[in-house]
Image (cartoon, rainbow, N blue to C red; front, side, top):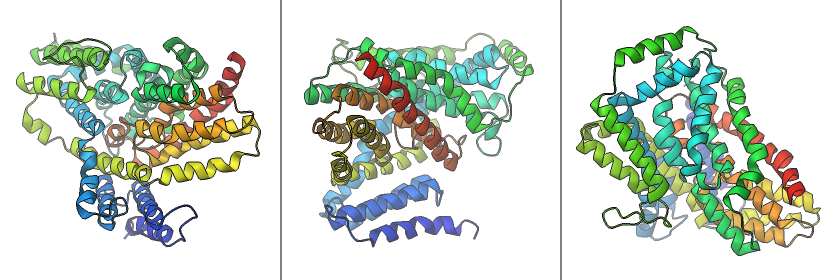
Length: 481
């Protein structure tokens, strides 16, 4: 009974919005679809049911009602479309990488090395995982591959060393370390042009819309005043928000050193796993770039998700993992169903035209404001409307052209500054929700970050990142350009 209100709340809010008169400019099915989507989000925030169940039920209701596709067969294909999304399989693949790290012992070894070097203080570990992401970000254009496939499997081994497990002991240190890793990848994704795939797509839209061209160093220079500051602030702010119970542990590095001695030299499986991860990173950097010739089995281009399948196949062939290990990885399949349903539902908002209506309706009220006020309001719209997306790529394609088109029609708006502010916000906005970007479902499903806490942390960090764009990057761009 204590949780009964949580169960019914999504239905109450969803039905309440459903029966509100449809706003001008929208068809009934668009508004009713939004009501279902809102009910799902409420269910996720208040943990009405397991997250995968919430998403699956919402997706079923939307498909049965025909809000996106009236034809039953087309509605079914729409409902299943998320299962073929490459990002979803990249996330599942990252979980399977974690099995390899765990079974081979490599993840524990790397975690012990980090703890030995920086484990005396919890803050030290926060900076370790933040700088690790920053180090590999410039050469890894997929933040899911970088944070999910490389950082997450290592970082997830650190809390165990301190006796911090998912659940009641998560707050000992696990919540802090995992949130640091997730928030850091949002910053690095904005800091480097090549750290997030949608950055390049957004630049292409910007060039087509206003003729803006930005090279790698210009991108870095424009965001560096905020980006470098955030690399310093993220572990500190996470420390305040997560309040880890273990703050200092001088005995742990000594223990970690003795554990490393006990482990001895690298085992066969650790060596193989090391080689496979280096292969994955090499292919993510080179094989995932269409401009680099890399003839592998006759192909010059390897999709980042296909890289994951290549490495998993090699893990199976070398018996680093067994197929039974993959089947038994419950967390991977929970996140698979959760993110698939959320990805499809969020994409549906854009497909039916709700996002375009909302963005255009808000933007048309900006005509009487100054260039500065209009710029800030357009950036605000662009940043926070991401609550309705589970993909930064789809957000870029759907909203950036609308915002830039509106900005061009407002007198006094510096279009280069507005455009660059929107571009720099892409990585940062990935922190705001458990489905805002590829790595988010992994950290959300890890069990270390309470599901209500995830929304709270995301809001606070989102506000800090947004304030940095307005208070630091905006004046810096005005001064520089």
